[in-house]
Image 1 (cartoon, rainbow, N blue to C red):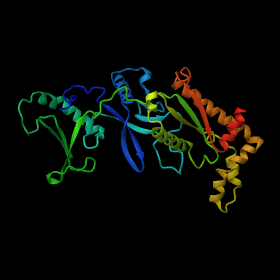
Image 2: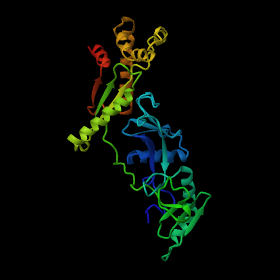
Image 3: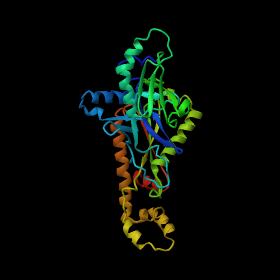
Image 4: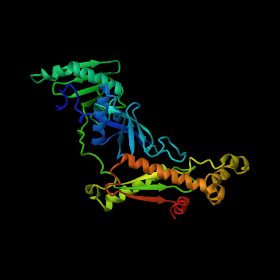
Length: 347
């Protein structure tokens, strides 16, 4: 029997917060680390109890790169736009996404039950099942409590096992019963209690990634995510003990192009109709080089990159106030035209 099963209120460490993730064509719920989940649950309970302290409105998560808006239950990137910006990438790993507070889980894959269904089960469990389970004295194979709806039935067994019986086997998978029904064991609380020690090391080195030409056709956010993933794989292979040192390298994309119009309407008006896709491709990529060589737009481009880099640095320092005091390192990784602009700014 679960240690949380007979508690009137589920302990903070048993509740797990998760965020919706879509990767490789597969959509699923991914649990936050224990440290993030505890902070989210603490904020949730403070708000539920009537606290108006704004410190509980937004909670930073996922290595201090995202924050959860407790009002809208959205996980939002801190340093870049949350909406999908590139028509050439279907990945949404680094976009804004939904979050869910989960108390009841399927034991087959430890995915959360539907929120409304979970609320019904929790009410039945606290109101009726807990007193009956506490009163169990002998061995029996009959349920101590049942709750039945049109589409499902919940059964509480004397040994503390709880089953969700449903006519739809799709979400639960695959334990078939008579009459076309399926049954899945469910759990009150996640399989791993949340711990504050379960968290990534603090950021000790931040690298700002500056894009080059063609940003209107691609997304520096997604390319930065690729760099981050590649570096993590290399570090795990060559420096497996790096996390034990308490160090972490993080990458932040710097998008200086999207905020600049650079007289694009005039360029569109004079673009010849023949071979329009090819000409549009050239307009959205290689023309950036011509813009930068022009004395009319050169200053605007340099100013845009300088402003965005300064804004991101100040934002990062406000979210990580101990970074500079503890000797944090800063690097800039620039590509293509971005490296030329950075050279001109720094010289």
